Every structure is written in C-alpha cells, then in structure tokens.
Image (cartoon, rainbow, N blue to C red; front, side, top):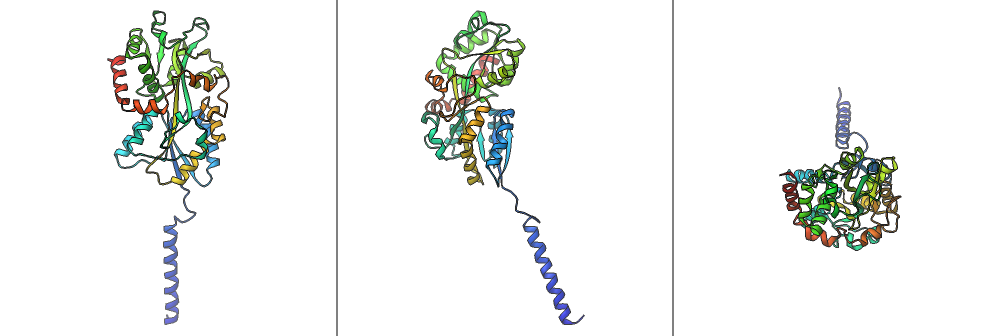
Length: 341
C-alpha cells in the first residue's frame, strides 16, 4: 500500500470512529422524549378520561402515571426521598395536610398559574406551593332497597344512635386521604367521643371509599360515610344507593395539585398544572363526578351547588389545614386506638 492510499484509509477509519461515537452519544436515533411523572390518587376510570386529554395538551412530553390511594402515594414519596430522590414531578392526591407538611419541609416548588385566579382564595395556599385542582365532598350514602328517604339518617351526629347499631361503615384514615380529612373535621367539630360512640355502635372501618360503597350496595352495612362522587357514579350505573347531604354539614375536601421541588422538568410541570386548571382540565374533573376548583364551571350532574356546600362551614380551607397539619399523625394514632385496640 502506498502512503497516499494509507492516509486515505486512516482518514476513513477516523471518520467512521467519530460517526460511531456520535451515534452512541445520541442514542443512535432521535432524542428521547422528556418524561413527566404524575403521582395521583384519582380513580382509574377518571384517569382513563383525563390522561388522553392531558397527553394531547402536552405535545413533546411523555406523561407517566403512578396511581394509588393518597396515603399510599405519601408513603411511596417518603420512601423515595429517604433513598435520595423521587421520580415524581407532579402530585395530585386528596390529603391537603400532606401538602402543607411538604411545603413546610421545602419539598414543593411554588407555582401559581393565571388560571388559578378563579379558585376561591380559601382553597389555595397563599404562597402558591399547592392549589386546589378539584374538591371531594364527604356525605352519607344509604341502600334505598333497605331504607326509604324518610328513614335515612339526616346528620353525621345521629349515626351513633341505637337504631344505626351494626349498620354503618366508614373509610379508614390510615389508607384514605379523604377519610383522614373527614376524621380531622368531625373530631374537631364533634370530638373524639363521637368516634368512641361509633365504635360502641359496631361501626365497620373499611379501606377506601370504593370499599365503603360495596358494603352499602350489598346491604351488609346499608349506611355509610363516603364521597359524593362514588355515589353519583353508582346511581348512574343503577346501583340502589341514595345520597344524604348531612344537615350538620357535608365535609368539603380540597384535593391539591403541586410540583415537586426537585423536578428536572419544571417547564413541563408548569404546563401540566396549567392544563389541569384550564377549563378543559376542570371539565375532566366534572366527568369524574368531582367538583371543579373553578366555581365558574358547573359541578357534576345530580349534585348540590358547590356554593351551598361551602356555606355549611365544613370545608377544609387553608387555615384549617395549616392548623391541623401538625396533628396529622396524631389523628391517625388516636383513630387507630379508638377503632382497632
């Protein structure tokens, strides 16, 4: 081989080496689409409607979802942070106390989109660390094949009366964020003696709201405390259940959305929050039988006006949440001692 030919071969080899290196660095193809992880407690059937709409609004970003109960999400985040980092970028669950605790630990990234201006101030963190994306409402449900409307209980307080002995089921605040919020409100208004009386009346504590609904539907426990959204959906599916808005106040539970402070996708995270708070995102909440945070958008079909529920005075507003956050674990412990020991 002459020197000219040898030089040409070396140049070609060098070019091929550089090309291979470039392909290796670029992943041998198109740049990988960034991912946004959303940890949520929204029901699967609601998520099945929300996720495609959100993905369509988030072109260029791949949405990933982790779905579990509010308390399970909190436990997972705690474990991940203890190990060094969480992949979560967005949190959407139903335990407002947890968000306040995360805020106080500096684990949330404040963001207040223009769309949040329509949310009542009492339902939004003043520093923008988290804001209400939807509202859950805790009511009383009953099996209409067993009780007529005039036989049904009218208040939370009367569920301790002898005639409801062995007939009532409630959610477990150790597993459900909305059950925890309800225990916080009712223990504040009615005292822990209320729960002691429920225990004496042979109340059943049964997981989350779906589990409570199943007990009511089977007639095993024909009266229960659960979310309005579960009852609205069940009624639409011809389940024999009816709704009571307690005269002593349905419990209104703001369900927050927040950005995790350590996210490596802050721009995409803000885009997602704006989608959720947009009219399209808020209407998706209504399709899931939940109240939107935006009072300008009508609530779910067959529900009472949201303003009338707020007027009952049993809303977990930001003031109540701030005051009760430090008591979150104590609430669980006290409830557990009363009901399970």
